[in-house]
Length: 200
Image 1 (tube, one colour):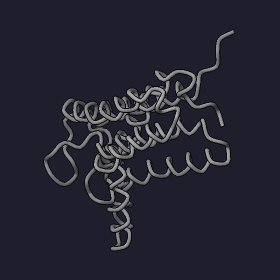
Image 2: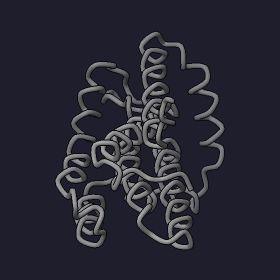
Image 3: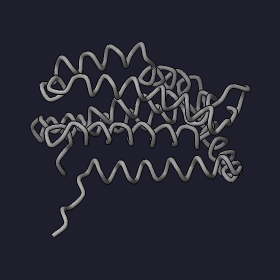
Image 4: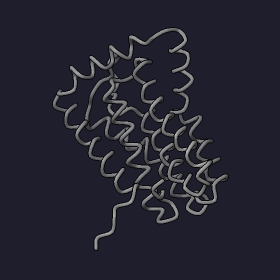
């Protein structure tokens, strides 16, 4: 009998597959109409309060927050400490992969000539908070569920912030989210049974 795929395997395949489809669609110019419509809808939510909130959320995708966050995760979580190098490598590989893929796809941002696909903030946030979701498996269900919900919310909000702050197209942000989750899932699989989350 064939073993049932783990949650990490499933997410790796789904997130990686969506990222690949998005990259192909962007390279072929097939996302422009949807990107424009979704971006216009999100920019319609702009207000001083929303923009201020999104600027604060945006820090959750920056290295000056994620670097100390990763160190705290490794120090504070026994499961992360057991394979500390793996989670550090994850957070180093995420920006390298994102930069490489930006140059491969070569898509400019909506405002400016610099490359935007995939979003670096969304990639980094999804890698970090995705790792936190897997590592939370060692917590009690009462603590694990809200922590995972907050981590998932942070991933989505950073992706939204990148669009509302006019830094990226929606597909750039979604691709970064997928790339980061795929990398976090791969790290969880490499960590072995103690590093990949059980089904809730």
